[in-house]
Image 1: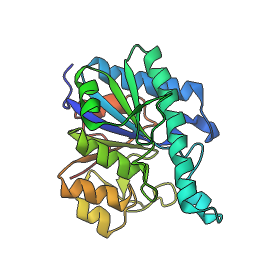
Image 2: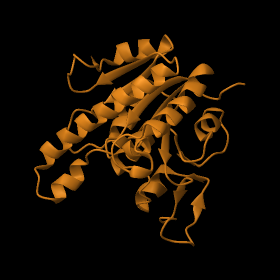
Image 3: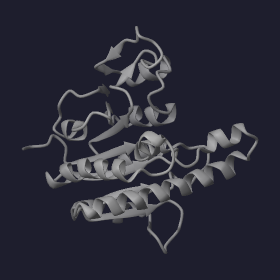
Image 4: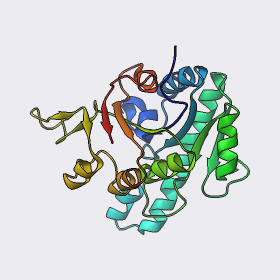
Length: 236
């Protein structure tokens, strides 16, 4: 079995770890996802991960309820650290050596993010989970994923979602939604297709980093993506 990519950055939502409950951590969901990541790591793919924190806390939602946005975003960053530690534990139970690196310093539980050290971990076959976003408020984990992907020289930013890829409108609400197999960065931005934050898409566009958007709920899609199969939508 030959994979197309040597190094990828996989972006997961926090909700993916919550399972059907949509809040907190569902051990079965975490283990199932860890098994899929372990499978591609076993094929020699170097994997960086960014996991959202929406299963615990969303800074934007908190701001909408009159909480200070900066405080809310900092709380969201801590939520991503919780998810990163949980996923590290699940991966290591699959015999995948894993390091959590955080953009904010919590040295008792994780390494501080240092770009060269992260690349060295990947070169040694360790999966690296990048937690705490960029450490800056007003930046989403999508943007953090794009930034880390570029910093570690990933060949693709793989965005795992709850739908099959990019549509012209929400397929869960509109039965006539049109699916894109491929779409340009500029079209995603100009039509506000909403698959990722605009700042993340623009960053990838400006640095020619392809984005693969695919459905995480279909078992085996992570491997198919790593094999270079036409799964989901390619933004390029």
